[in-house]
Image (cartoon, rainbow over all chains, first blue to last red; front, side, top):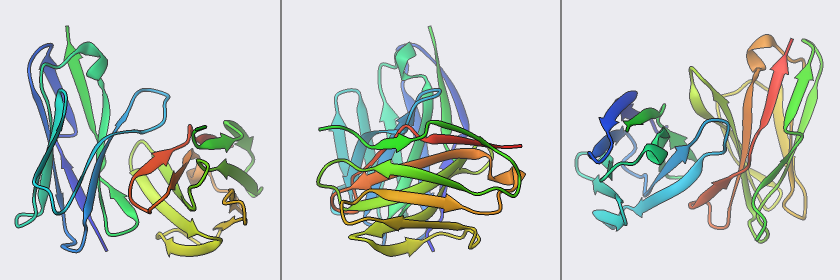
Length: 109
Length: 111
């Protein structure tokens, strides 16, 4: 079955800097790659997703890139703000979604 | 549209008891999945239902079971509770099986 590795497990950045979180997956049949943000005590919230036929997708300050050959995908957050502090999860799917173990991002004002 | 709704939000149970958790998906969504979230293991897939049929099952013991009703609402049952079952149980729904939205979760504490 699918296995998703996520790095780093914790990440601290200064406000205004960029943050990058990387994930690798094992099943070449996976075709959908979402990212979720989970604030303390809240539900995971879908923030961006990408299909396997697309290499990059951007939505304001966040972007996701996918390299199918290498089986890895990354989340990029630019101009980080304190409200970006949360745990971020990547996932890969050939149904069902398999999640990485999460990255705790801290944005220091 | 209303989001995914889970009840109850919090539960405290004793070892050996059983528990039933409920999930109402987003209107029109026919796929419902359940995940267990713990600090050490992250989000682990339990099972997925689509149109009342279990479509996928994760690697959990048979004490964990679920079902889906004709209105797409789903229930999850855990029998013979163990201390290690303490976790946040998240339900998620999807129209297509891909873009998936989570409920607030049910926090289960087993004492």
